[in-house]
Each structure stands twice: as structure tokens, then as C-alpha cells.
Length: 255
Image (cartoon, rainbow, N blue to C red):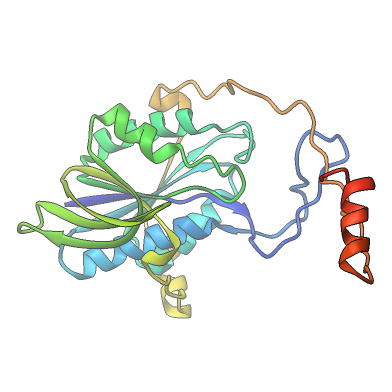
């Protein structure tokens, strides 16, 4: 079986983002980028499933600018067999929107005859968490989101998935083919070793475009303006409960 795994290039999680001068988004120039942390977990889980003989091939897909190929090479160094880059000049954090990405992934699922799609539950730039559910709907496949545990069952014809919810965790059995989105507790991604990084340079990478896939990626929404959050005022010390109550009542007006 073939696994399709999505990877996205985002501003590195350790970078302090800044609003751009035009107030239309965050500054991307001269800023460190890396693979979305949830996508790293998705890649790791795909590699582990292949190591368990659950899958025969892993194909990583990234949609974005030319620099997204660096992110694909990282996935290849982690153990992915080959990559597909859908190149577009649209900003991945704003203009390249979940529905368009889901439509392109659906086309690639059909092209590659994939039996399982693994995506990060969300990207840390847009925080939409929409691509995986939209893809499942487009394909008509079952889905298991926010996966914190995955185990093949029924002779690799289904997956037992532990997923995190607001009230705890639940365990689902999902028949294949299916769409899976990964949460932080699922695994700890491996580091790409130097030999594997060198080998990744020789692994195949296919270059496509949204037009070739027949998908319209025109943004449906746009950012009007963006601003940094206001600075929080420093707290004050009070000498007694009576003084605290007085300030809450007369200054903060919350009592």
C-alpha cells in the first residue's frame, strides 16, 4: 500500500514573528523556515508504518514556492521514498487556502492510488485544521483526526486510532482507505542523519503545478490588515483585601 503524507514549509516555531510593514501579514523575508511540526509527526508515523510492513511506499507532497523543495528533502531524509512538489507563488500562510490544498491532494491521491493519507492536524501559521477533514469529504473516505496513537489491525485492512478530544481520548477503528491527521502526542520525529541527508538528494522529486492538476487556487478570502497585540499593563501590588476590593469596584469596574 502507498501512503501519501503532506508536508508544509512554515516559519520556524522558535522564531518570533513580526508584522510586515504593509500590515497585510507577517514578515517572511530573511526569516528561518522549517517543516511544520505537525507535518514532521505525520512523516514520522508514515515511516514507522512502513517499518512495520504496513506500507510499501511513502510519497511526500508539498504545495508552495520553490523553497518548499527544501522541506521535501527533509522528509526524504527522514525515510520518505519520493516527493511531489506542487509549485505556486502564493503565500502559504494566507493565500494558499485549505480547500485548494485539499482539492490538489485529492487529485494526487487518485494519481498515486494511495490507500492512506497522513497530514498534520494543522499548520502553525494558519492554524486552520481544515485540510484533512476537507480532503476526507472530497474523497468520501473515513477520517480520524487529532490522532495520538495508531495501530494497524485486521491484517492491515484497518487502523485502530486513539484520538484526543476536549473531554479526554477515544479509540476508533477506521477502515482503509482513510485520512489521518496527527497530534503532538503521537510520536517524536527522528532526526535526519548526515548519510540519509546525502541519500535524499538522489531520491526522485516530481514537479507539478495547480494548473496541471486542474485546481483553481485563487484565494477566497484576504487579509485586510494585521497588527500586533496590545502590550499588557504591568500589575500593581495592594496592601489589603479592602484595597483590592476597592480597586476592583471603582477602577476596574468588575464588581
